[in-house]
Image (tube, rainbow, N blue to C red):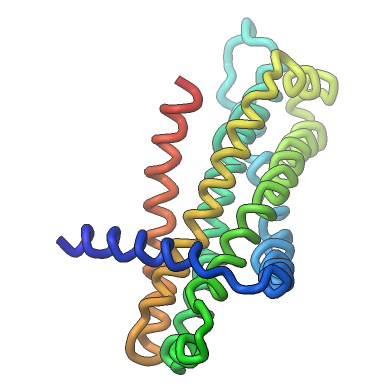
Length: 246
């Protein structure tokens, strides 16, 4: 019953978020600020993880290919497919759920326990829309750019690891990256990215918005935001794969 209660309250909150909009100029300014806070400032960790992720995929793929009948370009092909289909959109989104989700929940949760949200409501401001909608728009807009950068850096990291260690030639790796490329897989990855971004922003905002108590409860809400965002992302990943690839 608790699950149904939270699902119902979540959708009621989303209804409040998209109703009674404030002035667009205010939303635009806050959206740009959120894009910088939640997206641009996550670029460092995304870049680092992507480089090493691509390097590990390349090395593991090469070391597990024992048959001389398998062409060398399969390493590049595997790195490309693994990165675009799953690792960049899903794994990076799970990482962002930890970094961005906890930030959102802590910010809104702190405002709740300090009664700042109550003050906004008293002044006639739609607090749910004012606080949450810019975060949803910002993450939905900026996360695809982060994932595209992640894809490039992951594939580049694989090329770097393969050529520097000598386990595969540059030409063979690039041939594999280009082999039988279908642009739909990029579209599929970006659709997943937008959905995951909305999940991170809304689930984390929900946890923060309904925080009650003090600073300890803010920490608990931040933890719940990360855990529940990851769970919903994994569920949505399965559903989107079923709908878009099968």
